[in-house]
Structure formats: structure tokens, C-alpha cells
Amino acid sequence: MARELQRQGKTARIRALADSADGRRLGQMIDAGAVEKALKGGDSAALQQILRGVLGTAEGQRLAENLRKAMEK
Image (cartoon, rainbow, N blue to C red; front, side, top):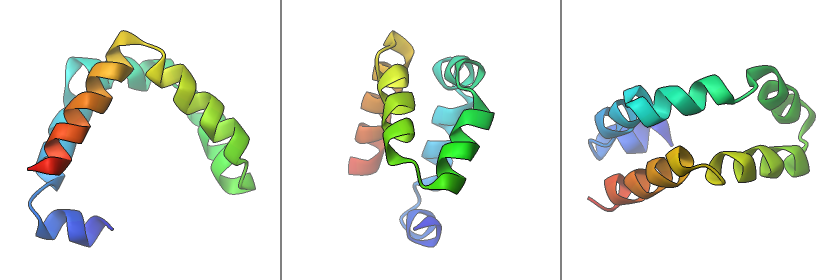
């Protein structure tokens, strides 16, 4: 997937979104340990709960919309 995004020239856009003010704020809000534990354990319910928490914020909604737009181009 990473290679395909790079081939399409989208990695820079995604990186810019992650480095944006909204991306940095969300990064501070997310419990990286909880995400890692859920990923390693294959706990999709926990990941969905984390994602709902992110998308429940104004920053998360803006970032998701900007990501959607970046993927269309």
C-alpha cells in the first residue's frame, strides 16, 4: 500500500496532513500504547473505539475530510 501511495505521489500529502496542526493535536490525544496493543492483539473493536474517539473531534473530522480530498487527487 505504501508503495502504491508513493507511486501515485500521495505520500507527501499524507505526511503534510500528519504534520498539520490538526494532525499534531490528534497525535497528542491518541494513546499510542492502546493503539499498539489493539493492533498486536488484533482487537478490531478497540481500534474502532479509538477511531470513533478521533472522528468525534473537530480536528479528526477536518483531518479525515482533508485525507479524503488528498486521496481523490
